[in-house]
Length: 572
Image (cartoon, rainbow, N blue to C red; front, top):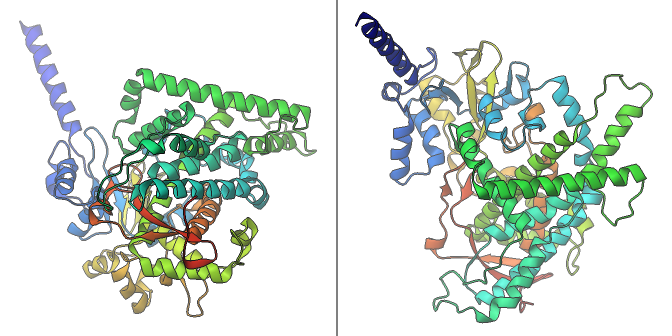
């Protein structure tokens, strides 16, 4: 009886200890919501309530910062976990990612999200010599030579195929709005796949062929303000597999327990089928690239790609006269996972950014017309403009418009770091091991509000002139002019630019993405007018998720002649 009683007492003590560990345990020197700290699920109930009230879920954390009148707070997002510190001061965030890299590094929350999909990629590694060596191996894939001579022609060719697809959809829809989410996804994947892997997916081409085979049987709604009915085209197995695995990555990034989520997911037949196809395809392309390299010539008609450049870099590192005896070539697993990471991250983010660009152009017709006129003035009146003209012509208003689209799209509004030792941020003590989520948004005028409360210690922002600070009250508006100086030249330093993060852990594919956006957007703006669409199809809300993706992606396009903004032409 005594033994049973002792066991019960021990079990009760253990249960109470576990129960207490499940509750939030706040850091002592960082502001937090007192009610959330007393709940098992911390801030989660308030997040759910905030979304149910019709607010954008992405805005909950900045909303909490304003509630607590502090640009730095701590959040409680899951039982049994440490608080997550959030910094809502983009000037301080810029300081963190660029200047404090020795004291802050890749956070466990990020590593755990990416681990199931590409465990051998550089994105999972801390900023060590091993990570730097792996990053150097891929450096040439973002060189001018690669971007201009290998990637750019594919970008231009795909942009022209997208024009053909949109012309077909205009004809089928007969002036009705249609969704472009899948179209931009196919476009981005058609661009990045051959650049990385050397083969072709032909997603846009197959979409056009499939729609032409079925468009005669489509009955359209009576109202021209209803979404057009479009033929349903079955996508290729590889495209479906990449989309499925990409969706799992988004869930991983948004999930508090990505490990458990993936453990369950990997047991589903769909996951197994998609994973097997991905493994077989990419491994086969790596083996083909190695065979090409060993033959020292390209006899199979495959265009040069990132794999070829990596293998060349690997060989030169090993054979150079002063090479270290400890140079270890990358394994096929490392090459495979790096390729897959670049593929997923690169195509999805670009597709979402293009969706936001289409929405901003639709909702800002004056800026759209000014952009089109600036393009037609700057570019030679050819039919259509050449790739070289798009890449080499100085077009400040176009650069400003693209930068403004990226700023307001804000598709990945957070970066996360972990403190490698005890430190101070904005006057608050941060303990070693704390995970710090940082805003990348340059939008709402929150800094002046924080300064009124006396909590913001960012000297850079305090020194800003009143005119610049006051302009932040309109930061939610689409205004490319904010990126132009008084002489009309593009000023990339007009505002903080954190859409691609920064420092050594900044977005590796930034130059690739910017070139792709430049080519595709220039072609689309010159060829189509983005007309107004009904309010019920024009929500600016985003769907909950790791990436800020627009809930609705409808456009209504008018086909234009290449050299005349006022001349409408019949669709092909």
